[in-house]
Length: 530
Image (cartoon, rainbow, N blue to C red; front, side, top):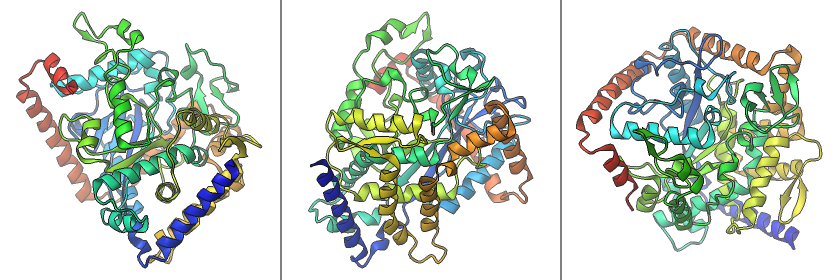
């Protein structure tokens, strides 16, 4: 029965793809908006986490839309606007990196997801956002993360890929699906359709793009974990693809019992709302405000919705002071945020066009494939598939669970990539270079030959050079800085735009601080109000 179910689902997908191709306007899927958020630790020339404040020349981390900080004062986050083409997005990221490097003095951006050598949590400074209520809230939230999970986990970097389908696609898509629904309710429903399929198939992203099979030994200090040693300073999993996305990284045990449904917008909001309003006794024992120090925003399972770590999120741009769940309830899903990408040491901006084009095709496949609701018992199975690929994705003969039976991972991966071929051809219509089919071919080669994966390349590089992970990452960080500073001529117009935005962000932070009238306690109460 399970095998018949899979076959039926595949036939339905083929019928949907054929209907799109025969519709006379398959190009409705072209031109989706894509953006990137890329995190990097600022480090000293010797590779240690920088203890300096966020550079003033980069503007205010609170109010600069393009250059901010994540958990740590040293963890820079570069945020692009959205673009219709991947090359425009990559060019923007390149220009933004160039601007940042021009204002960092002798510091570097760490070139990998897993952090540099760290002696203790005290080496990881928590981000500061000024004296406004919103700024204090951001810092208190990060104190909560530090107290709940430890600072080391929060020093991991990643790349988030934001994607929305073309607005004018949805009505024709509803016709294609023979749906009577139109408008935002239909759009949100289809995005949740995609989210469920990402839960089923997203392990493929870890296999193809994971590039964190190794860590500095210091990352494991104080943890009940033993990994094989690659060298005196480096630990690794022999077949890992992404330790960042494993239970050693973001998939921490503290959230292991938290289940958030993606079967519908209402269920998603219900589960997250319950988590941000339910007291968790171990966090209650930490205390919230103790002696004037905010140890966390509250003692709930989640302080705020963003604390829940998932491989992919439904998103809506929120209004000022609006909670993410309230924004979703107000206006529905606007785009999805894929959070499973490692920072690639082999790409100066952390990503490349082949990766971005593949993700666009992959998300479209997730939209098109049949996507029944995920049963409660299935969550554990789907999470286990992701964890298995993160820790053992290159293991010969590896199997995953599908429809209640073990399936060879590479067989399943080939099926998925084969099913994307027709979608890539549609994206390539009107382009003789066929970049989407080329991007798909690059990924197919990784499935055919595991040595082509970036995680295998990382280990091969370490073995051939004899370097430790720290030495390799530091070398690549220095090379990236040299690359950006040597780029000539710079995009003067864009560099001027970045400087103006940085200057304006400093004025904006000052204005927010001057306008505050509420006490911090009242501000938090208002933010948390139903």
